[in-house]
Length: 192
Image (cartoon, rainbow, N blue to C red; front, side):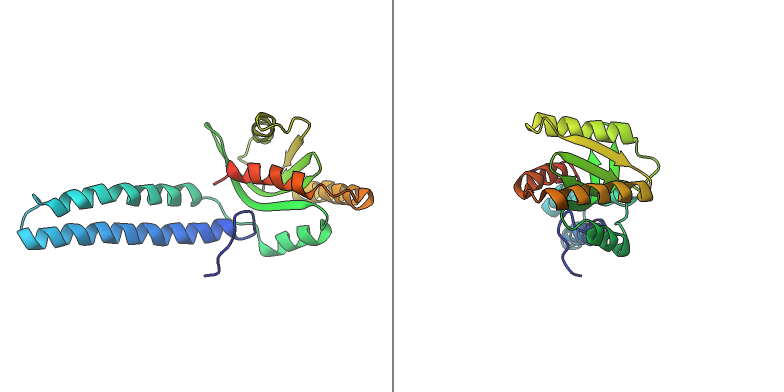
C-alpha cells in the first residue's frame, strides 16, 4: 500500500484502510493480553485484565476514526487528473472532510487562487452555505480577512469556475504560492 499524503487524491481511501488495519491490530492485542492473563490464572481477576481494559481506550479511539471515515470516499483519479490538467497554476487540495462542532462536510476538491477559495463536493447532503461560512470564519480567525469561499455540488459548474480562475492566474503570473499554501494548510488542519 503506497503512502498517500493529506490533500492528495486517494487520501481518504488510504487513511480508511490504515485505520481499519490499526483498529484490528489494537483489538487483537487487547484480546491476546486478556487471554494470556486468563490462561495463566484461570480467572478474570488479574493484572492483565486491567491492562486489557485500559488497552481498549486506544482501540476504541481507532474505531471512532474508522466509523468517521467510513461513509466518505476519495475523488476518482481520473477526475483529479482532469482538474490538475485544466488548472496547473492553481493550488489544489483533494479528499477533505471538513469538520465543525456541528457537522462533518466532505469536500472532493478545493482550488485556491490568491484570495479566492473555490470547492466542489459530490455529496448532496452538504449544506454549501454553512460549509462555505465555516471555512471563511476559520480563515478570518487566522488573519485571512479578504478571502472569499464558494462551494458547489455541480461538477461542470465547478470546473468552469476553476478554469476561469486558472485563466486569471495564468495572465497575472503573480506568484502567491506561499499565501495559497498557508490557506490550504489551514483548511487541511480542520479536515480529517
